[in-house]
Image (cartoon, rainbow, N blue to C red; front, side, top):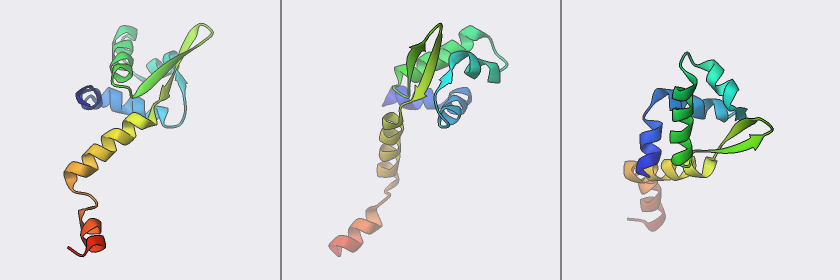
Length: 96
């Protein structure tokens, strides 16, 4: 979970996640959006991959990245839990 939140701490990585919500993208298409070197973009993609947020798949000579929604759901569940989301609903259900 630490790698996941560390990966999400960088604005470029959050933007990549946002872009991948629309569907898989080639690494070159992702890199074209940013004004930074190819190795820097690759480093961001690797950080997202290491955190389990994206998965690469080879397509011919290029690599396409796909958002791994299960990792995002895990992070959301954790954040909702620490924020106490659902506590009022639990109290209403149990009558506490």
